[in-house]
Amino acid sequence: MKPTSPKVVDLLPALMRYARRLTGNESDAEDLVQDALVRAYANADSYQRGRPLRVWLFSILHNVFVSGTRRAAVRERFRADAVAQAEPVTAPAQEQMVRLHQIEAALTALPEEQQAVLHLVAVEGLSYQDAADAIGIPIGTLISRLSRARAKLRALEEGAPAVRPGHLRIVRD
Image 1 (cartoon, rainbow, N blue to C red):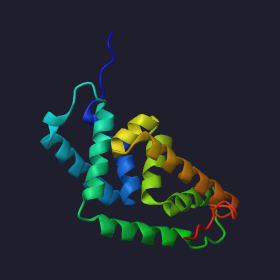
Image 2 (image 1 turned 120 degrees about the horizontal axis):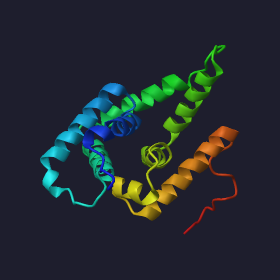
Image 3 (image 1 turned 90 degrees about the horizontal axis):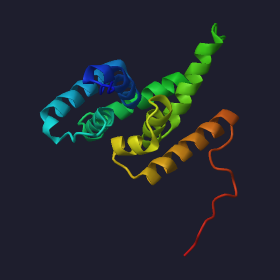
Image 4 (image 1 turned 60 degrees about the vertical axis):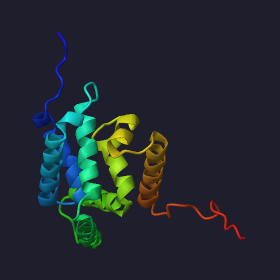
Protein backbone atom coordinates (compact mmCIF):
# COMPACT_ATOMS: atom_id res chain seq x y z
CA MET A 1 0.00 0.00 0.00
CA LYS A 2 1.44 3.36 -1.03
CA PRO A 3 1.78 5.91 1.83
CA THR A 4 -0.44 8.95 1.41
CA SER A 5 0.92 12.44 1.21
CA PRO A 6 0.01 14.81 4.04
CA LYS A 7 -2.84 17.21 3.46
CA VAL A 8 -2.61 20.90 4.25
CA VAL A 9 -4.87 20.46 7.26
CA ASP A 10 -2.44 17.85 8.66
CA LEU A 11 0.38 20.40 8.45
CA LEU A 12 -1.43 23.22 10.28
CA PRO A 13 0.03 22.44 13.75
CA ALA A 14 3.60 22.52 12.40
CA LEU A 15 2.89 25.72 10.45
CA MET A 16 1.45 27.33 13.59
CA ARG A 17 4.48 26.32 15.67
CA TYR A 18 6.83 27.84 13.14
CA ALA A 19 4.67 30.97 12.80
CA ARG A 20 4.66 31.41 16.59
CA ARG A 21 8.46 31.15 16.59
CA LEU A 22 8.69 33.81 13.90
CA THR A 23 6.11 36.24 15.27
CA GLY A 24 6.39 35.69 18.99
CA ASN A 25 2.65 35.59 19.67
CA GLU A 26 -0.45 33.57 18.89
CA SER A 27 -2.48 36.28 17.16
CA ASP A 28 0.22 37.30 14.68
CA ALA A 29 1.04 33.61 14.11
CA GLU A 30 -2.56 32.90 13.12
CA ASP A 31 -2.53 35.86 10.72
CA LEU A 32 0.76 34.71 9.23
CA VAL A 33 -0.47 31.14 8.65
CA GLN A 34 -3.68 32.44 7.09
CA ASP A 35 -1.75 34.79 4.79
CA ALA A 36 0.61 31.97 3.81
CA LEU A 37 -2.27 29.60 3.04
CA VAL A 38 -4.01 32.27 0.96
CA ARG A 39 -0.79 32.77 -0.99
CA ALA A 40 -0.35 28.99 -1.39
CA TYR A 41 -3.90 28.66 -2.69
CA ALA A 42 -3.47 31.59 -5.07
CA ASN A 43 -0.22 30.09 -6.38
CA ALA A 44 -1.21 26.42 -6.32
CA ASP A 45 -0.23 26.13 -9.98
CA SER A 46 3.39 26.84 -9.01
CA TYR A 47 3.51 23.78 -6.75
CA GLN A 48 5.84 21.20 -8.28
CA ARG A 49 4.57 17.64 -8.00
CA GLY A 50 7.06 15.51 -6.16
CA ARG A 51 8.22 18.39 -3.94
CA PRO A 52 7.24 17.81 -0.32
CA LEU A 53 4.11 19.83 0.46
CA ARG A 54 5.45 20.52 3.95
CA VAL A 55 8.62 22.15 2.64
CA TRP A 56 6.66 24.16 0.07
CA LEU A 57 4.29 25.51 2.75
CA PHE A 58 7.15 26.28 5.17
CA SER A 59 8.84 28.18 2.35
CA ILE A 60 5.72 30.22 1.63
CA LEU A 61 5.18 30.89 5.33
CA HIS A 62 8.75 32.05 5.73
CA ASN A 63 8.61 34.29 2.65
CA VAL A 64 5.31 35.86 3.75
CA PHE A 65 6.86 36.68 7.09
CA VAL A 66 10.03 38.17 5.62
CA SER A 67 8.21 40.30 3.06
CA GLY A 68 5.29 41.29 5.33
CA THR A 69 4.49 44.91 5.95
CA ARG A 70 4.33 44.27 9.69
CA ARG A 71 7.92 43.04 9.88
CA ALA A 72 9.25 46.02 11.85
CA ALA A 73 6.29 46.01 14.26
CA VAL A 74 6.60 42.26 14.82
CA ARG A 75 10.31 42.56 15.56
CA GLU A 76 9.68 45.34 18.07
CA ARG A 77 7.00 43.33 19.89
CA PHE A 78 9.29 40.31 19.82
CA ARG A 79 12.08 42.32 21.43
CA ALA A 80 9.69 43.78 24.02
CA ASP A 81 8.54 40.28 24.95
CA ALA A 82 12.16 39.18 25.30
CA VAL A 83 12.92 42.09 27.63
CA ALA A 84 9.84 41.29 29.70
CA GLN A 85 10.85 37.64 29.98
CA ALA A 86 14.44 38.52 30.88
CA GLU A 87 13.38 40.27 34.08
CA PRO A 88 14.33 38.38 37.25
CA VAL A 89 11.78 35.88 38.49
CA THR A 90 11.22 35.77 42.23
CA ALA A 91 10.96 32.47 44.08
CA PRO A 92 9.58 30.28 41.31
CA ALA A 93 7.08 27.69 42.42
CA GLN A 94 7.74 25.44 39.43
CA GLU A 95 11.34 24.92 38.41
CA GLN A 96 10.39 23.55 34.99
CA MET A 97 8.51 26.72 34.09
CA VAL A 98 11.48 28.83 35.12
CA ARG A 99 13.76 26.67 32.99
CA LEU A 100 11.41 26.97 30.00
CA HIS A 101 11.43 30.75 30.38
CA GLN A 102 15.23 30.71 30.49
CA ILE A 103 15.37 28.64 27.32
CA GLU A 104 12.84 30.92 25.63
CA ALA A 105 14.87 33.98 26.63
CA ALA A 106 18.03 32.36 25.24
CA LEU A 107 16.29 31.54 21.95
CA THR A 108 14.90 35.06 21.77
CA ALA A 109 18.41 36.45 22.19
CA LEU A 110 19.44 34.78 18.92
CA PRO A 111 19.22 36.73 15.66
CA GLU A 112 16.04 36.04 13.71
CA GLU A 113 17.75 34.02 10.97
CA GLN A 114 19.41 31.77 13.56
CA GLN A 115 16.09 31.27 15.38
CA ALA A 116 14.45 30.25 12.12
CA VAL A 117 17.01 27.58 11.20
CA LEU A 118 17.19 26.24 14.75
CA HIS A 119 13.40 25.96 14.92
CA LEU A 120 13.04 24.23 11.57
CA VAL A 121 15.80 21.70 12.30
CA ALA A 122 15.46 21.13 16.07
CA VAL A 123 11.72 21.57 16.64
CA GLU A 124 10.15 20.69 13.30
CA GLY A 125 12.68 17.98 12.50
CA LEU A 126 13.34 19.10 8.93
CA SER A 127 16.50 17.85 7.29
CA TYR A 128 19.17 20.46 6.64
CA GLN A 129 18.33 20.42 2.93
CA ASP A 130 14.57 20.75 3.50
CA ALA A 131 15.08 23.59 5.99
CA ALA A 132 17.42 25.38 3.57
CA ASP A 133 14.85 24.95 0.79
CA ALA A 134 12.05 26.24 3.03
CA ILE A 135 13.96 29.42 3.87
CA GLY A 136 15.49 29.79 0.41
CA ILE A 137 19.16 29.73 1.41
CA PRO A 138 22.07 27.47 0.45
CA ILE A 139 22.59 24.48 2.74
CA GLY A 140 26.05 25.77 3.71
CA THR A 141 24.51 29.01 4.95
CA LEU A 142 21.95 27.04 6.95
CA ILE A 143 24.64 24.88 8.54
CA SER A 144 26.68 27.97 9.39
CA ARG A 145 23.68 29.73 10.98
CA LEU A 146 22.77 26.58 12.88
CA SER A 147 26.33 26.21 14.16
CA ARG A 148 26.43 29.83 15.32
CA ALA A 149 23.02 29.47 17.01
CA ARG A 150 24.09 26.35 18.87
CA ALA A 151 27.38 27.96 19.93
CA LYS A 152 25.60 31.04 21.23
CA LEU A 153 23.09 28.92 23.16
CA ARG A 154 25.93 26.91 24.71
CA ALA A 155 27.72 30.12 25.65
CA LEU A 156 24.57 31.59 27.17
CA GLU A 157 24.04 28.36 29.13
CA GLU A 158 27.58 28.49 30.47
CA GLY A 159 27.39 32.22 31.17
CA ALA A 160 30.28 32.92 28.83
CA PRO A 161 30.48 35.25 25.84
CA ALA A 162 29.48 33.62 22.54
CA VAL A 163 32.95 34.25 21.12
CA ARG A 164 35.92 33.48 23.31
CA PRO A 165 38.56 36.21 23.52
CA GLY A 166 41.54 35.55 21.32
CA HIS A 167 39.54 33.89 18.56
CA LEU A 168 39.10 37.06 16.57
CA ARG A 169 41.86 39.18 15.15
CA ILE A 170 41.76 42.85 14.34
CA VAL A 171 43.11 43.38 10.86
CA ARG A 172 44.41 46.82 10.02
CA ASP A 173 44.89 48.35 6.58
